[in-house]
Length: 236
Ligand code: NAD
Image (cartoon, rainbow, N blue to C red; front, side, top):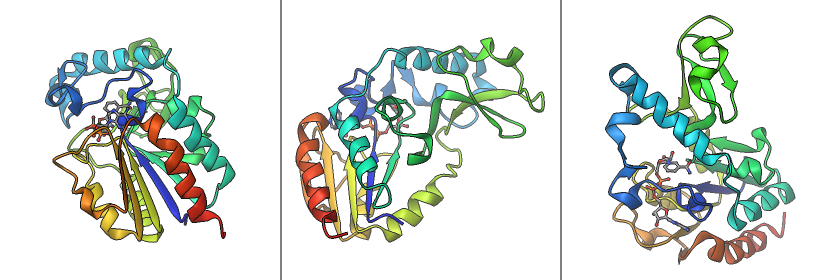
């Protein structure tokens, strides 16, 4: 288990031009969460849900990782065993910055993948529209395909990995998340040291529990955060 867990949310990708979630009144790209990313919406609102993720996939094609993604990937490569990188983001900006698939955990899924609703097999499709892939059926079992995204109300299997990492790590670093989905205040209480970086305070986070708090753009705060992490790890 790693000594340091770096956990990011939509805010880390904001400076790369991918819009966050809560910053626009709980809408995501002008859609209500209940309509396109909640449990059941594939059955009640399937076409709109598919279109929404087709558009999100197309939107990230030209987006580039920013300095914060790059520094985190460098740190991970420098301390592969001491640092775990996890993100709530479904974009691929860490990957574009050079992280490999097995070096990051995407807690809420990944936009460029489809998953079979029957057999759970996962398929990479790049930036294509869902219906342009595999004659719309799972190539393995013929089942119905869906975006490989964890919708609100659905189980998030990778939370198990997050819980084990949190129980073992000594420093948790939270970047660009409002804490509405994950209770990051609790994460800070679980670990010896903790860092929070957001643009501004959030109603869902009690920042008094964090060892260090940076209310600044991630690209501006990441230098000091990286120094803190390196200092923390210097004896290993
Ligand atoms: P959120 O939208 O609820 O909160 C964004 C947070 O980022 C806010 O606290 C804000 O202060 C902070 N922020 C904004 N710009 C920042 C910057 N430049 N530097 C540092 N911090 C900044 O995001 P969330 O907590 O991640 O929850 C949203 C959910 O929606 C996630 O579960 C995620 O799966 C999904 N989502 C993903 C993406 C993506 O993949 N890029 C984008 C939108 C939403």
